[in-house]
Image (cartoon, rainbow, N blue to C red; front, side, top):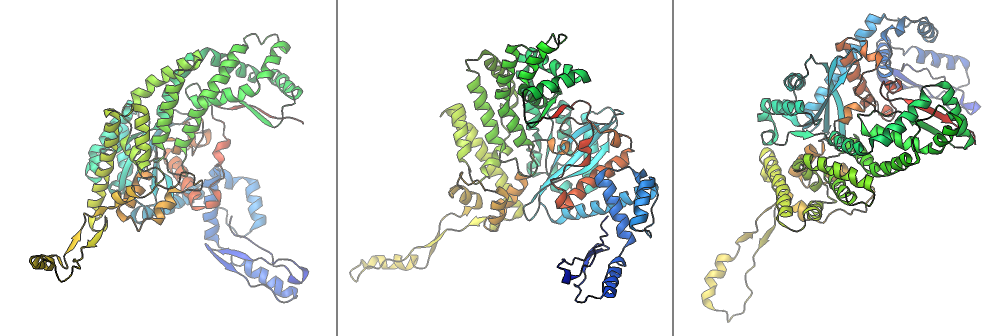
Length: 612
């Protein structure tokens, strides 16, 4: 609750006097006391107490329940009621039905705030969508909006969490998304949609493009963005098939110690014998999610010597990983580390990722080419398998995201030119790809210039040609010509904002504090048209993982608490929590409470604090 009672302390006793009071949403300060009179102090404390607001307290209770994911029955628990009676006897404890209603009112209030923001304080809105499953196998569609505000802040909000009827075909999902878009009145502000690389999602994007074509830039030609993290998942999974035997045995070893309390205690005893310091963890992976396999291997390798000792101590541990398995595990981890780091880059939500896409994809390609020539047979085979899948998905790179790197003033066209030349050499293929990016860039800019007025998109380079200052003996026949050109303003072709931007020097790569959003905020007045285009492109997320990160890092499965609620209530609580966390900045870095819930397919096995 936010009704705060701060005692007024006597300043003569060297105590700081604090009396900040929330009064129905506003703060009112009480002046410090200048008297030692206990009556005065009591009177001031009484004034603070009388600022109590029942309506605000109910709003705060609803916010607390939403943010902490508390059940509505909390208000009926005797311990809660006793706490409230002792804290504020006059507060009328509402029923769970009324509390539920208050939570819905909070949702509606926050939704109106967000609707106003979409209308007046942001550029185009890019979407991500993915499907979630409850423990009753009900399918929910999560729709997240990504945008950059007028003051150049990157934001994301879960705007819908809808129950979608089976079967979850592309047409069914596209209808659900279209209805959500229309309900928010954001169809004229649509930028792009990022989806997992599934055949059904191709249908989703195609249907949405048809329906909203007239409102999309360039008729929606670049509307659909494929989730880079999902494609990376498919690529790495192909590579892991080469070493699935070693991975299987390490996974089974982890399961073995987890399946018995006695084995776990024996394992922990060996950990202490090795004097392994700090907090150690072993996890079981989700075989369908390569990053969890990487984390499992990385954690298990830390305990390699413990597992090896366990073989001698436990006669039943007869299918333990071999020395060769551990060697392969180390090689795999070193190889996959780059992919893990790139996935984290693609999955970040606090900074734009559209300007990072091209470089990271190029880096993957160069790594696979290099490792396909490795002297290590395992690495070479993995790289060749992964290169095959890579070529399938990135035969033609996403040109709209390639444009994103050009709009990064540290690179402009330089990185595009360098990367294509390192891949294709100096031949026609490199020139073709470079010119394709230039073409898409120019097409986008021209479209924005038409939409927002070319009169402010030109940087004038004017020059007046002066008359000759010849002497008296100049040819008299030139006199008429001199008069003709006298005062005539010769104007060089006007340069567009895009041309001027590309011709200017790049920002130093060495600047570790560079912030691309702050750069464009500072240069917005210089490039009014180009900055609009930048704001919309930088809002495009290259991964759908943003909505997933709002729940768990392990899978799109609703926890038991949410699964027990009605679909409408699920949407209200999930969306309202997301919106409230954004409106309360001090909560931004605090994990939401649902992260404490166990996710079925990924869990901590060992969490050890060892003695020194």
